[in-house]
Image (tube, rainbow, N blue to C red; front, side, top):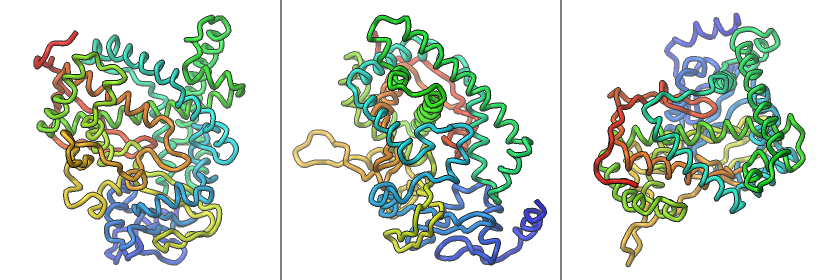
Amino acid sequence: MIILLILSSYSTKKIQETTANGPRAYPLIGSTLSFNKNRRRLLQWYTELLRLSPSQTISIPLLGNRRTIVTANPENVEYILKTNFFNFPKGKPFTDLLGDLLGKGIFNVDGHAWSSQRKLASHVFSARSLRSFSFEVLKEEVENRLVPVLLAAADAAEAFDTAAEISARRATEPVYAVWKVKRALNVGSERRLREAIRTVHVLVSEIVRAKKKSLEIGTGEEAKQDLLSRFLAAGHDGESVRDMVISFIMAGRDTTSAAMTWLFWLLSENGDVERKLLEEVDPLISLGLGFEELKEMSYTKACLCEAMRLYPPVSWDSKHAANDDVLPDGTRVKKGDKVTYFPYGMGRMENLWGKDWDEFKPSRWFDSKPGSTRPVLKPVSPFKFPVFQAGPRVCVGKEMAFMQMKYVVGYVLSRFEIVTVNKHKPAFVPLLTAHMAGGLKVKIKRREVMSHP
């Protein structure tokens, strides 16, 4: 702690802070001075540095920790996530950060533990029965619960938020060992984390216990279509299932809601885009907005993609090199280095998205084909737009997430006008799942454009 105080005293000195490869590094302490100075604005700092880098890759060595390599180069992203996938696992430093919360769930493991869970999850998410079951659940929830209580405050599980926030902030400590010392002493934020995780474990274990009981007494096949039932049927022990459930709750609970929250705000700022979205949605709503109608909502999907380009639910993701390597742009990687790809910064690179990268512009996702009466969504490399990750670890719930978001956005906007209360630009908070600081405060007005069944 004394070292940190000394470093902080130097952080205000006017020194040349950047090089072509990232922040200036010094013997022993590396770039800890600059990191500590910018730790409250890492997203903006990384983005600024990446724009200055010819390769769009930077290196950040820190005191007492292996260096971090951050890249916004799509060729590097493809190499990390696909081409040389097995050399870039999550790695022990990453799994240590989230191990208390996520345990050995799919999003926090490598090797056989990952591949076995991935195989099961991929099979489940690709099953037609689950897609049909999920759509019916979604329809029921939106029509009978979301819309009737849209004006009421949502009751969130506070323990999940606390555990996720503290786990994520471990990675922003200038000296890596600080959070481990606090955990060993059970003090401060680490004590609050332990208490929150205990609450989460109790909650999830009760969900698992209740599901086991319902399966024992259930007689219909419909009781076995959900994800948890299938995990239990696969024979995993109680702790493994608990960790799986926590991982999927963390992955699905906040990501889609964060994406839609930013979309609703962006639409409130761009009335012309909202009108185009409604022109697409209204005729489909009149048909009942079923599974087939959702496939037709290409403009709504473009709006969602554009919102996630600017405000990705996962702003960065890190791997750790298993062996020495060289990235496509020539960056040398040493065994143990943390290698981070950076969706937030990538969405703000002029060479990837053009001079208008800062505009909310869904039209950038379309191609106009000769003879076509309407624009069609163009294929965009997942390594240029890695918000769902890519390669072997690409999000298994990607298509289900789009289905859910399109349904909610279409159903809500066709019935209600959403008017934001605060006129200032909301803040983007990059935790395990990035979110809008304080949420989106709005007034809801019944839309009278058309009648609905």
